[in-house]
Amino acid sequence: MLYLKKLIPFLLIIWLVPAALQAQNNNQLSREDLERRKRELQKEIDEANQALKETKRSTRESLGQLRALRNKIYLRTRLINNINEEITFINRDINTAYRDVKTLQKDLDTLKAQYAQLVVYAYKNRSAYDMLNFVFSAQSFNDAIRRYQYLKQYRDYRRRQADNIVETQELLNKKIAHLQGQKEKRAQTLESEQEQRKTLEEDKKEKDEVLSKLKGREKELLADINKRKKDAQQVQSAIRAVIRREIEEARRKAEAEELARRKAAEERRRREEAARKAAAAAAAANNTATVAAPPPAETPKPAPVEETPAPRSSNVLEATPEALALSEGFENNRGKLPWPVTNGNIIGHFGRQHHAVMERINVENDGIIIATSKGAAVRAIFEGEVRRVMVIPGSGYVVMIRHGQYFTNYVRLQTVTVKTGDKVRTSQMIGTASTNDIENQGEVELQIYKGTAKQNPEYWIMKR
Image (tube, rainbow, N blue to C red; front, side, top):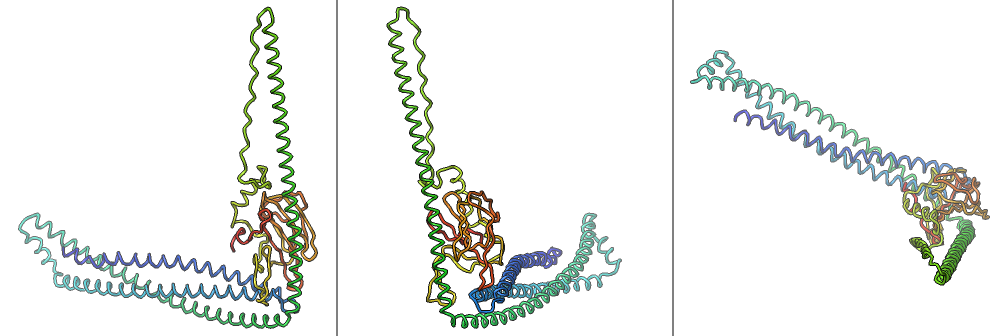
């Protein structure tokens, strides 16, 4: 019983230390996520810096510079928030380490005190004669065996207590070293957070300067807005005209197939009626003959014609199995479609948006405008068939690809590598992005239509 009582503190250490280490591991996993997110944000900031560098090659301030600066500010704010979350985890880890150090120090003191008592007791009973006397003074042989086993267990327990002290001291030293490392990391992270805040203030100052200069050119910007609006209307009119022609052609084709099917059914009905009348006439003639003839074989009934299952909707753009499969495949990849360019960021969102400088003016986008490098490869976001390649003044080349009842339109292309009627694969190159000379960067616009209804491409392509 005495042995078990003295063993309880050691058992508590065995239980507490792994629990503390497990809590540390759980925090470490979360901090690894924060580290990964910080690397991703830093990569995006580097890309924004490169975009800003490209736009600064222009001799005048531009909307591209303003957008790049605002994007940098947004990303750097997210990075600062991420660093603050990391500091919170570090502080939590430091507090946990403090508690673990205190617990281990207390347990170590307890073990040392107990071990000191053992040493004192062993010193007082160090005589081999006293030990032998303790064993041989037993009243029976079994009692002597039990006394001998007790002495042996006592020596083993004292040795284990010494080992426990060494192990606890090592754990304590490791925890203290970890605590010191966390303090140093917190100091470095705080320094990094301060540097990011300083850079953020510089970015905001630069953004305000660019915005102030751009507001002095409102007439020029308003003229550019009106020109882009006119160009967008031309693009939309041309796209809607092509879609209407596609729908009309599909309707005419479906009507022609239905007419042919009805004519074939009518012709089959006529042949069956003629065969029935001929069989009846032959049967009547046979009844008047002197010699009975075997009855005529029954005219086989035509096999029932299986009705073609109706499509999921009355949309004529899905009248064929191939078109239906493309529509379903396109829908099944909603939110997972690739971007039309490898590197880029959205500078014009879908629908009605406030102008970047003149916020009292709204601009309407039929798709999303993506800034990329000049001459960047533009790729199809899904397999389909090229239905039209057009050139529209002010908007460059426009490529329309049909995917069943869906159409993806790639506007503002500088060159194209496909032609009408081509079958394209997902991520196949179809052209290159045009160049915005004022902002000194590449641009491409992606539009998605379901029939004649515009869709928000940001809901269809992958998140970045």
